[in-house]
Length: 254
Image (tube, rainbow, N blue to C red; front, side):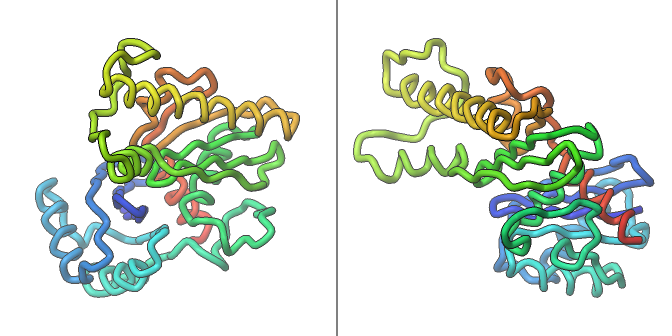
């Protein structure tokens, strides 16, 4: 089985693949201060809870946007799995031309998402990832990673509203009953929910217009389901698109 690990700024997602099928998956908080042993104990307990042994893992692939975590996961893989992990970064075979001015600047997760989305559609594609930051990535009809856009994520925006204003408070992010809120809670919910939906749809339409293509649109990340329900441009939501991209890259490099 292949263990795919995607380290984000807020959460880490791990998936165990049996051939092309995602057999098991876990999500836990990313804590760069944790040691390889602490993560090893965590994974061991997660595996045991599913009746699995660490020895069932034949290969490991990792993408990380937290540089400090790379060495930790390398140590973890070598100590607990006796494996050298494949790290997504410069030198890895992606099968996708990266047309960014400096390809080394592109986050590993963005490339992995692009590979998975293009493999699925084989067409011009826009990937919207609702992570700590909300990212938009565009893949051309020819399968080239062209670039994208980055905006503060939904969670960051809510936190900033709470921390930087004296009279506003934290609210649960759900769809409000009306766009024009008649109390503070509904007003904040409306601004975030409909505001981000308009942002997503507006960005997607501008990307399509600029590139002259009616691209397919797939969303992933923590708030994807919520925003997609109101969006007029998101066609599909897949919370595991990053893990699928990691599986594909593992196969291309082995």
